[in-house]
Length: 390
Image (cartoon, rainbow, N blue to C red; front, side):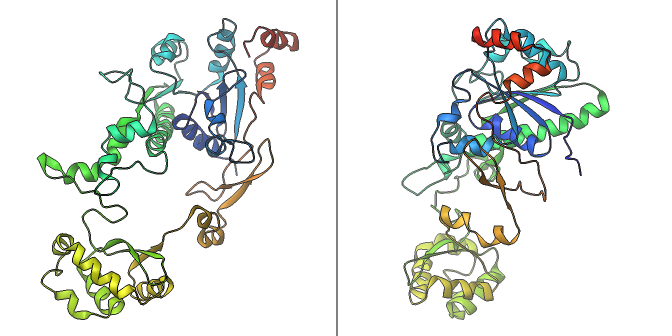
C-alpha cells in the first residue's frame, strides 16, 4: 500500500530537534524530505555526540528517510537552486534564527504570491512577534519559561525533563498543523503560514498545573516521581532494594489496596486517610506505613499483589531495560534502519503498523542527484562546488 503522504515534497531548512522531528514524522508517512544543510558542517545536531557508532544520537533519531542537500543559502548561486526546489515543493519548514528566513526571502509573505499552494511552517522559540521574538530559545530555557521546571523535581530543586520535551512539543504541533494545512489546501487550493512557538507548545502541555493554580491558587508542589496531588501515587521501595511505581485513582482502589496489597483493611477508613485530600495532607505518615509493609517483600512480590488487585503499577526501567522491553518485542515494534555506519534499530512510529523507514543520510548524500533533477549539468554542479555554494 502507498504511504499517505507519497507525492508530497517538503523542503526543510532545519537544525537541532524541533523541525527535524517534525519532518521525520512527515517522512514516516511517505513525504519526500529535502533537508538543506550547510556545506562542510551540516545540521549542527550531527556533532552533538558520537554515541551511535560514531553518529549523533539526536541526529539518528530525527533524520531517517531524508535527502541531504548541502547548500549555502546565503551564496548568490543558491537562489536559483532554492527557486527550483520551491517550484516543486508542497511545504517549506524552517527553524532558522528569528528573522533569518525573511532576510533570505523565504518567509510566507515573500513566497505566497509566486507559490500560492506552498505551506510555510516557521518554528521558533517564542513566535514571530512580541517582545520575546528575538530571544534565544533552547529546550531547557523554554522548559523554564513555560513553568515546567517550577512544577517538576523535588521540593528542594526544580529540574528539567530528561528528554527534550519543548523541542518535541513544538515538532509535534508543527507536524499536526502541516497535516491539517494539507487537508485545507485540498479544499481551498491555497497554502498558508503556520507559526509554531516552543513556548506556546509547552504552555499547552502545562494545562493541568495552570488550571490547578487558577486565579492565584497555590500551584501543585514538586513531588519528585510522586504525583503532586494524588496519593499514594509514585515510587515506593521494597525489601530487596528495588522500587515499585504504583498509582491509585479513586476510593474504590484505595479500599482494595488496603485489603489485598497491604493486608490492613482498617486502614481504608482511618480518619487520616479516608479520602484523597486527607491522604495527600498526611502523605508522610501514610508513606511510612506503606514502606513498612513493603519492607518484607521483594519488588516482584509487591508487583504480583498489585496486579492481582488490579492496581496500576510499573517497573522503574533503565534505558537498557527499555531496549529489551518485552511488550515492545511482543508487538514487533522495532525495525532496522540503515545509516552511514550500518543498520541500527528504530522504533516503529506509534499508531503505525508500517511506515517509511529509509536510511539516515550522510551529509550531502543527495546533493548531486537533486541538482541534476533541477536541470544542473555535471559541469554546473562542479562549478557550484568550486564556488563553495554546495
